[in-house]
Amino acid sequence: MVVVTEATFEERLQAFEARLAKVEHERDEYKKLAGLLQEQVERLKRGLLGQKAERLPQNDAQLSLAILNLALGGEALAPLPPSEPLQTVPAHQRKKPVRKPFSEDLPRVDVEILPPEVLVEGIENFELVGENSREVLERRPASAVVVTLRYKKFLRKGRDRAAEATEVLVAPAVELPIERGTAGPSMLADTIVRRWQDHQPLNRLEDIYSRENLGLAKSTLCTWHEQLAELVRPLVDAMFQDAYREPYLCVDATGVLVQAKEKCRNAHFWVLVAPEKHVLYGYSRSHDGKAVDKLLQDYKGYLVADAHSVYEHLYRTGDVIEVGCWAHCRRYFFKALESDPERAKVALAHIGALFRVERTIADASRKDKERARRDKILPIVDRFFDWCDTEFPKVLDETPIQDGLRYARNQRVPLRRFIDDGRLPAHNNISELNLRRQVLGRRNWLFVGSDDGAFANTTFVSLLASARLHDIEPHGYIRDLLCLIRTWPPDRLLELAPVNWQQTLQQPETQQKLLANVFRRVALSPPA
Image 1 (cartoon, rainbow, N blue to C red):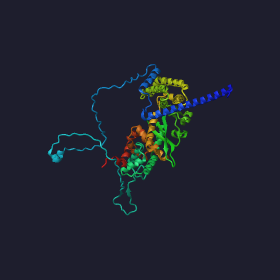
Image 2: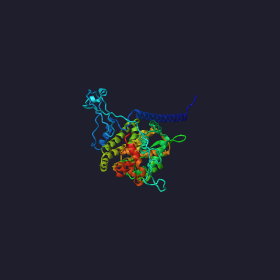
Image 3: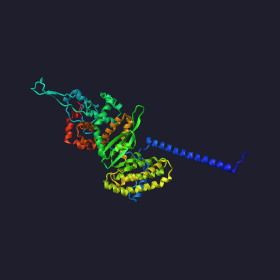
């Protein structure tokens, strides 16, 4: 018979309680892990099948209006109309759609269509009394042309050809974008636009040009682009220097693979936006403070960015002032919708109310923006951060809602900064939108071949993205840029940037140089 003393019983009880506590802890950890995995599954499902926009549904959007009205004392915008169930309505007569006419700039070819009787009996036996016409869009195959440069030699009449002093006159060599090259500016512009505007990988370009009987190898295209990148890089550098003089810049980064001998290595593309002026791209092997210093150089001013640690050393000096991104803050709470919908909806409603006011003052002057932000947005922001401080101690550790609350509280000062300066944006969406250009291209070409390839990429993507910012047709811009840049004064290179391009084109000097370019004349002449 086993005798259980009181001491033995206490020891066993303590051991049992310890095991129970361990099991309960493991249970909580597994529940937390299961919740995180479920959230990831829902996020992936939403990415594949659901909405992409980080905004509340119609019913939940009423909450943002309620918060806006509460913050402004009931003087905000009217509530959204309630969503009603769909109703079946009787069919009604629709207007016949009107076909949009083709552009007047397109060349036109007239083709006469005669009745069979006229063709058989002869047109001289009939009287023309009218016609019906319609336009049909057709496409000619892309045409390439070989330009044969014949340098004629001349001798003044009356001179003795055998005399030593007799001078034979020959025109100087026509200048090409690539010295001793075999491609003109329009052909080179076509390869650049297809590769970096249309995101065609080199192997596809090789196949496309092969179908057109051009026979351009990938190695040839790479060599051309690297040489042209060296030619136009001083212009891109001048655009960077001009951007550094702006009061604020927007920056973001994304990863890219670089081909190596054994396996691809990781590197990064950066985008630097000077709103309404330049969209510029950089490349670095690492994502650290040194890469940021190389990108921004000695810039002093406001920097709109996410809260990544690579920028922190800039803010410590005081020369660069951090501006937070409310869209980035919103993303944290959008990710928390699955695990903590009640708190996430409150946060999203506050941020939605903020953006609702921002949209109403998008075209206002700087002073009007500052006044509206102080009167309407500041109360919303104050209520939001008060709510964050209240809710943060209540949430579970290592959860998406805690990440969102922590981010907002840590970024309290940068997120408020736009309120006092009407020039500053409330978000960094412009950088993210322009970075998608590289992300879209990355899906096609997968990796860059080398650091030189990345250099060419960022050089031409900077020019093409800036051209798009100013609504400039990309092929014509690159073609004319290659016609001009070799003889353009180095101290006036910024005149060739997209921000100044329309003004530069109107200058007589520019028109004279473009009209004198033989390759441009051939490229713009109609096909025979």
